[in-house]
Image (tube, rainbow, N blue to C red; front, side, top):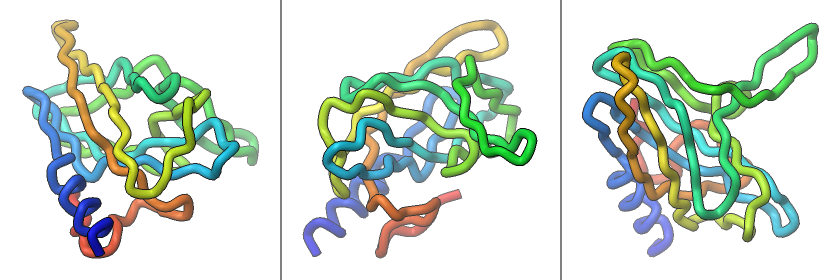
Length: 153
């Protein structure tokens, strides 16, 4: 019960805001002991046209990724930036856009908190950084919030 309360509390406070960008429902997928990669997911909404141009974490090498079907094969690739059109929510979710973590220093367990830095750039090329503390969810999680935590859009 204490773990669920802590996860709910962290999720509520993970709602973060950059001058023009709002981040809701961020989460990282937990790993198994020998796993060296995982993903982070969230919704991004910008008041003006902006781009997510960089991601980082002290726990692993991090990249902005896209998963898409090409010639009937699901392919994942790094992308240099993710456009955030003004007033539209861009969802980072399994099987789509996401933050990819490689070379994890330690396994990530459900309930852990993962530091994640997002760097946004506006149309004038001005960059701002947003520091997040992202809760880890069970390995089999999808885009749904954990029990007791309302899903935020």
